[in-house]
Length: 310
Length: 324
Image (cartoon, rainbow over the protein chains, first blue to last red):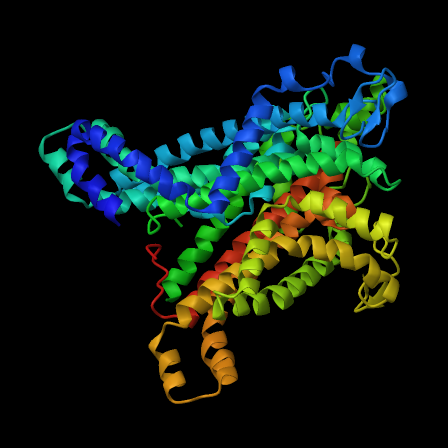
């Protein structure tokens, strides 16, 4: 509640607000990390991001460089050594690829798809939601009907619909996720903006004859950001999960750039003969990613205004 | 009340109509089933004959009109793959999916409701914390991966349960059901558990939040002050007031269970609609895709309509004017 009042007071003069934000950053961080779960989530997230970004340098092998693969090494259990003596920590798959390296490269694809689609959905949804709240009347009515309609369908069904129409592939998966998720942002943005719209600083801005676009971007948007950031964090996790699911169903990522979902799906056929590691470890990586993001998002929700976030 | 109802029905009709256009156009403009379904060895004359027999040579709007016309009669055209009416192909698979979804829902309620009640009543106990952490896992674990792990554990390692298919079925009301035979039940258990995982967490969290809200109400305090037995307070005063949101969610989520069964069915080789739609997307079997999507659109639009109406009937404070 305290931070909310503070934001409200600062808003009309965004410039002078900066230094006080600086003064608040340390206590805010301390507050954030006072929850052990948030700390665990952050560590997990840092590890995941680090692995994904630096995969080509830290992975023991480039799993998609055919020259580095040896068919003699296929289907080795975790901990065994390669033909030439290099250890495979998490085993190999049917083509002799190192599972650990596969996971590292797979994380990249998963994260890129998840973050890109969640970000695009956030951009589109927030813009539409804010416009709906600010313009009101017809635009709002129409937009919110659309949002209601969209939200009445489960995400996987919307995604399937898009993929059934556009066909398989990574880009189409990104599009499918955007279509499936923009409405959540639109609803949140509009809900918050409706509350903010009534506040004095917006009236003040209007009285000063600041143009509408500027009011929207410089005054309304910054004060609606908190719940949107929370939603966006959670949605990245959901997008990664959705992408993995779609890839698992054979509708997503390409063979040359398999995401975690695709790796898990590759291991499916070996599972019944007891070669568990091909599916198991990519799944663990996926789980760590999703749980870390959710833990951070959960904490963000608590820290940033618990009343607005839903 | 009647006018708003009629307005809602008309709106629902428009939504369905709009979706027919989107779905039909989308599926028909992109992807060319001619290349996929017709044997490339056929000569030109035979090709044309097949194209004509599938109705793919006519202009798009004609195809759409005949599709709309067929829609009113429940006729989506013949499946390219099964050479049977698409709707029949789907309806054949419907009982399997319904059975799976219903079982999952029962599991979710039977597990989620009591656990949520417990976690809400005694939020500070360690066991409650464990339950809540578990429910976070339930949300975060990717369903399909959990399915694989269930197969790995119970089918491969322990060998207790089968991992594929429906098993033996028995007839009831002219439809085949798996839950009537032991073999069928053992086939049903793993997929149902898998599908129930997410909904269990959802119901659990919802129940807990509801309990914590209701428990603060004056009527619960009053019941306590009157010295009523705790079991009566829980069952009558708390549980009864919880039921409105919980029942709503159960109603809403049932539709999504059917949609999400796509994943579970693909893993466990469960011969339902979900597996059918994935196969159809991969084979570009357009009539089946369109019929499935339209069925889902109608299902969800009507589910929402029913829930809206129920709200107004249950709670007069909610009005159907679109502002609520």
